[in-house]
Length: 94
Image 1: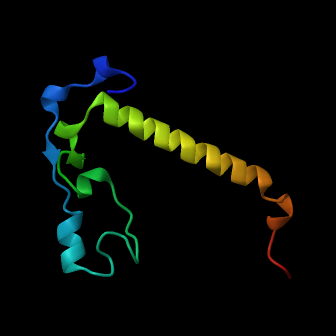
Image 2 (image 1 turned 30 degrees about the vertical axis):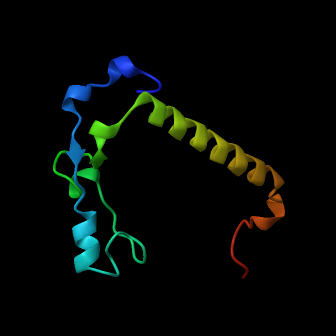
């Protein structure tokens, strides 16, 4: 909505409940991926292939997410620029 509102079909937005909460209650180690992680595709969490409350989406919330992601990306890039290449090793020791 923040970037291309004309591309968003809000009439199709609904609350896509994720099965991950049920899984977390039944399987505390696998659960929500807090310990062991499973490979997954979005349809594993909701048959519609989406999760979360899309009805609550707004351009303002999208803009806030973009700003937060941009700040975190800038921090990551600054940190990477300070990382000495000597911390990377070509191969294990013999």
